[in-house]
Image (tube, rainbow, N blue to C red; front, side):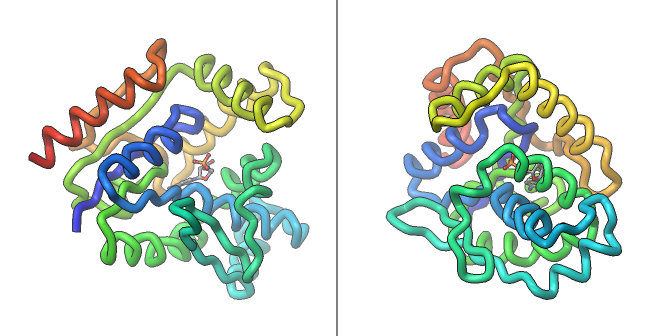
Amino acid sequence: MIQIAIDGPSGAGKSSLARRLAGELGFLYVDTGALYRAIGLYMMRAGVEMTDPAQVLPQLKKLQLELRYIDGAQHVFLNGEDVSEEIRREPVSMAASKVSAHQGVRDFLTETQREIARKNNVLMDGRDIGTVILPDAQIKIFLTASAEERARRRTLELQQKGQKVDYEEVLEDIRRRDYDDSHRAAAPLRQAEDAVLVDTTGDDFETVFQKLCALIRGRLA
Ligand code: DC
């Protein structure tokens, strides 16, 4: 099986690029952030203090997560409920960032992610795919862009979905999440040594897409 890992900070364009690249290659696209988001949503609903592992970890026993592919799109099911839409809300982003800092939460999701990659050619995006989940991935890409550019893209994306958002707030959230994601003790966000760094600041989607296509095809040839 072929494994392609795409890691990087939030809002770098990973998911839209990875989805389209996977379609182009005929690989399964796995958005691992959705799994952390579903856990964040569950903990929000349960009303637990998300920074406290003693409150978060016992809850995992009650939680069943499943990724299903419907018409080619990934859906995440939380105890049988399709929460794919709800997990995109901003409060859930913050919750996901907090719960993802606990090693127990990461361990809970490790096997789910590896199992998918054992059975399919995958293009998996996340924060620790190249470093922890699939260290032997044939291709590793670390995709990034400046915080301001990522905030602009995220604001636009949320506005297009009809959500009321403020650029400054989105920027602050992105900065806080960048800091939390890269400073946590458990699997912090960092570039794998054998990953190719791609900075998308100032580039439009099509340019980056073509660049990544060429890179992947070159490596797979
Ligand atoms: O990619 P995203 O914005 O949907 O991710 C939501 C949160 O989940 C993000 O703050 C970091 C965390 N995450 C992680 O720790 N490891 C991953 N492989 C994917 C996401």
